[in-house]
Length: 113
Image (cartoon, rainbow, N blue to C red):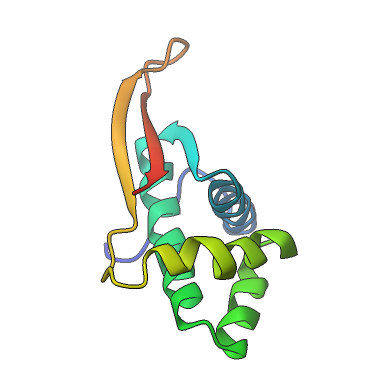
């Protein structure tokens, strides 16, 4: 099945969780989470950075529709996107860390390159 991962959540919960994760990731530049959540967050975050590279008003409004904090959108357009002006994709990296202690889920670090 192509498309997206369900992540064991209802659609509303999944969308809210991903919006919060992307906002937090762009705010801090790094996050620790499980592999599947990181891959979904990575996909959306790279689309947001591409919007930031466009830099026009329409792109800013599209980013504001998804990202929950206005100051994070400002940071995306003013600081993050200009760093990747010459780069065609691949703005993030996933590095495996270790299994989580409680349930042995594989934990990774998602970070900006």
